[in-house]
Length: 479
Image (cartoon, rainbow, N blue to C red; front, side, top):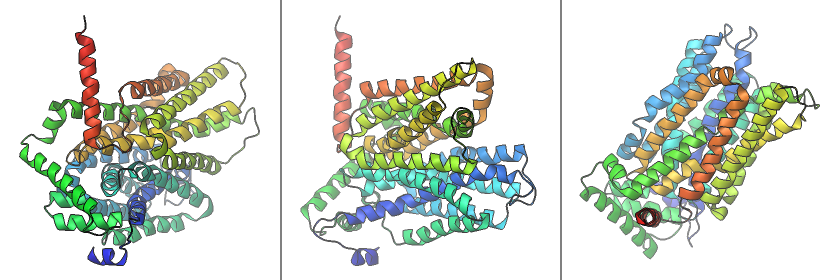
């Protein structure tokens, strides 16, 4: 760490270290995007005799390969917040990166069904950790006016990983692609060995002088700078208050009114984002393309289809990175949840009307599908992770992130497991209508309950939540 600071100690307040550090922190999620993206173009190939596996996969093998990651993610995700608070953000990021190395190594050694299922089970570690540990790490190394933009790099880099997998699958041999997947976390693992821990965690470990050094390095100023001293004093003050309060983390969340309201807001936004139909649109993309090609000349191979989807995702997450600090969280969340709802409503109408024999242009479902994917990546998805770090102190972030992650992965598993059966029971157009209703509810809830968190401290946000609570109580008290 001292070597790193001595070599990259920029002066005059430049924040280049924050940008560089943020990019490095999000690379494990880029690699996890490659993990998830690899499966989409490979499923059909694995089921053929000409595929890379010794024997073709059965439908049962494929069902386990696609779902086991979410099962293990719930198991590994449960203690992830506690472990992050206990052993630090850096240690847990190293473990996350090592699990990615192990995943790619298993696939390089063997592609039999049992090996791929094992690798996908191990992928449950980064499937949880990338969404629990990395947002906390990012928030705690970022200035207040950068945390939204740097936080949105998570989804941006993940979508770069998706697109990279789609392109590599179309251009490279399977083994070559696996080696490229292994190279990324291996290099990042050794880079992380010399990266610093966050100032908040160092204060928690009573390493105040080291925390000052790291914070000065991140801000590009001298350790003797007055702003560094003041910021560290604030962190120390919060840590002393936390140690003086004998309440457990869950007691604080449940008993403190502002904290509990922030917790409910987080869960509502996180769960509605998971049930906005985004995953299902990706699954049904091939079906939509096929139906659309009946009325327009849109003949794309399966690989070209997923590459188009990956490009739309990447464009959406790029918009989020550019605008989240300019528009604020609330406006971006309201507009993108509404846009996803409009897209889902259009898909529902198209499936219903074409199902009863009414002709509609083939470009309509493709446009609606791209709108859903773009809008989700542009705001609904990244902000659902950013708000956890905005709304909670560093003593609570790990626990809340773990619980929200369990809810998210459980939601994913439910959709992956039972979506087809629900569609058979009530038909696909009613299912997409349900997703539209969820999105419109999220839009309305955000308008009425979500406080703007851009460039605000946790204390300022809680003060606003308490003020809103008092106003609600006063309105209820009026006869």
